[in-house]
Length: 426
Image (cartoon, rainbow, N blue to C red; front, side):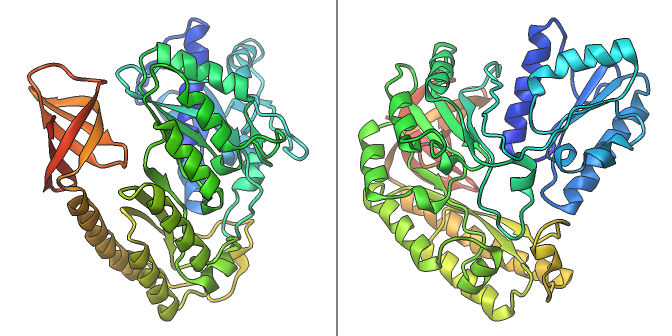
């Protein structure tokens, strides 16, 4: 059972493969017949902690005889709290998940709670677990980085994940080749702070890894998960274009379009710097999809600050916005800040930003009508009708009498149908 981000989802899949490789059978997470439950927790907010605890208790209530192993960010930050939850048998943090089967078998023998959570201070080793088997999938996530050194004032993750650690490039390329051999057409590079890839390896950067993966036959597209604007440069974009495989879709995490709020968040850029990077992307990739995250109701955010943020968001012209209402996370600087924003105001600001998001999404879709794009077909949604995503992350449907699942086809974007564009295969 997985709570939280894409990295957690990747790691849960990797853990399930460790079990199946050892002869265990994976069953649906809602089943009450499991012998072992592994719960991958999240700790981004206090609410995330509560959901993690609720999930643990529900599992044990449904199946009192099962072994319950808890891993992830919440157990890393609060291992003692997790150990006190009735029915928890094994506590791991965000490391050493490759030992999960051995720990479960040890508990089965000894019947004593096991807690191996340790401090991440001084940990500079990327601990590799891989998720290669995703039946029916066309895109594969590949984790290449862990940890974060940013310490944004609202975020607990640097404490849960430790400092930045990058995967050995040769090891990453090896897995990319295996994914290509398994039939995957697209690889999504993921991590906690992907843009920092290579900084701990010496003279290596993310673009170097992208170029190496682009050389692998069978991989048609490379996509990045959330990255910081700081990685965007003339050199990065020029080299990215030359690969002919990096998707023209960038998820640049903004969080606020107000410089005062950005400073309070300890985000290390200004809106002018952020805007400059979006323009640089569009210089080399004119039709790029640029998506983002925005937090509303951060402590001290006034109506004027929020309006400034909205104006900037419209100026950038994002293709989609992921909107989050600020939620206190104990242990962070922001949790102790004065002028916490009322919950009703957060809701109002969130609703206002949702309206802006709808307009921006519609505008981006219309701007792509008539364009020729490549489409990776992911599923057949009804007989003769298929669904996929363009390189700039527009969801499209196409008609085909042939089974084109997991094929990259050239299409013309014809018309909008809600959040899906109708396209025609060329």
